[in-house]
Length: 297
Image (cartoon, rainbow, N blue to C red):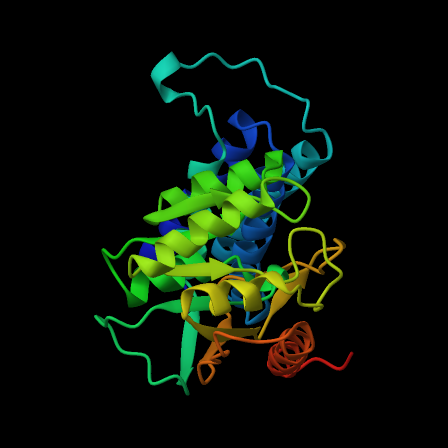
């Protein structure tokens, strides 16, 4: 049952989300704000269906209206409402707002951990976290929760969307390394190798930034071969999530839902391999990663 205190917390979160949607002209932020508002409204709707009356009806309608407004704004990212704020309150980059949304959403989720990797920190072992592009939303939050205060690195694309991800990751003490197969690829590989050799964990989406979905590129195998770092597959499975119509089917967990996080047994590759052996290692790791999604492809 929703108490008055909890109701005010939900409504307060809704007002903050609506404020972000109004003042940040970025459709990602506005759409996330809308989804979170709609998700919060379902808590009041459940209370209403149980017969708790006017109190639940008001909360449901208010959050529904907030979500609808944020959703409308996400459809028109060029819209800027004429509301003047002091300059110091204006956010120049949406990355900070995305980091805030990750933390707010992460704090509502129920996590179940499966640790086949025997992962325990602090440790001198170097891990290369490997996870699919459509499941990366919670990775910064998980790493900050499990390894507080320890810096790491995260590979992001050099595009505009990559800048938003880079700014968000920086808020979680993750150093963004900008690069992709088409831009700054070699330089990004060198930077990542230096981070691994200096004892930092790094995170990579092996099918990003353009896909195809669930098809692993060879770069992550080459990086492990170059540095001797252990590849640690990270499988994230959501009980309830929204799947976006993007190339990767990006998954956004719903508030208060369950999340299963599995750290698979570390995958090691030999330092000396032929091209055929590299391809065999890539295919083997890809199979492990695909099976970890628990999806029928």
